Length: 391
Figure 1 (cartoon, rainbow, N blue to C red):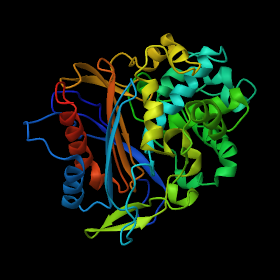
Figure 2: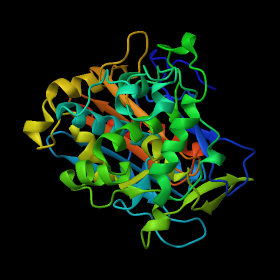
Figure 3: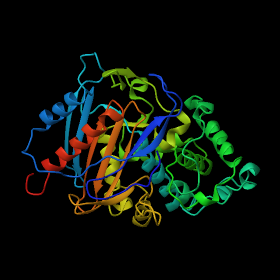
Figure 4: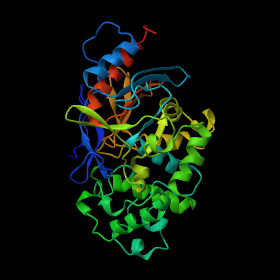
């Protein structure tokens, strides 16, 4: 389902992944769609201990593990955790365990683009034809005029996904696979009626990542490590399921006949710019604080100016989507919010930033969409816990 996000009181959006093909338990070919959930404060409830509240939600929805947190721009962090790294194993989930961030990767890719804009390497209005000027398949196609901003805001006319089962090569071949995906796109007509219209697209962000690769001459994964993770001290950040790359790490899960079944499946590596990053919640917060800053170049040394950050937070007219963020308002945030979530159907995470208050809330689980409601309620728990005057 692909629908325009709504921001009525009591509503929000979730970016979640749905299977590309008839899904089996261990399928790794997954895609993204838009479905509504909520992160709005409802009737006030008595204060509840954080760990007790998270464990209540986890048990109610039969989740393996659940993490939630509240943080501020000034450096405060309040994180809680409940449950286990893997169903059937007696290993408790830790607050510093890496979690798969799914489509919350998209704002990272857009931020990397913003850094290149500030370095004068490209602009938001730079076209595919300009980036791939030496590729006749691109320059001779109807897609040559598609801009970086259009790809970033899901308004390029790109379909949500290519046939990922054709592009499931290993991470070592991710750059060449993304080039093949670009060629798959430009060999198809551009749907002119769709240009300027919001349609959530993993394909668009995959192409955006490949444009960054073309400009920089390095794989998107290398650029993420060098330009974002290392400068921000995100030592736990990586790509794909943590259980495949980190010893003693959580596993993802599917809900099968009411039971959590562990899996280390993931999206194809080529989809990386659209959704394969993992990180601990503390390291994710290091990144998220950048988007609460006024001027990251001055405040944390990341070469991203206030002007460009504003562009990353400015939706295309007629939509609520900016550079990897859905933009709206919430009463608890005293105005503007930036939000996104992600899932590869085996993990789930969600973030809400309240820029006017310099704070944010996050939640994550090592199971897919069956954790969405619990994560939403965990966010509400964190917001109530840090209401003005209760801290």
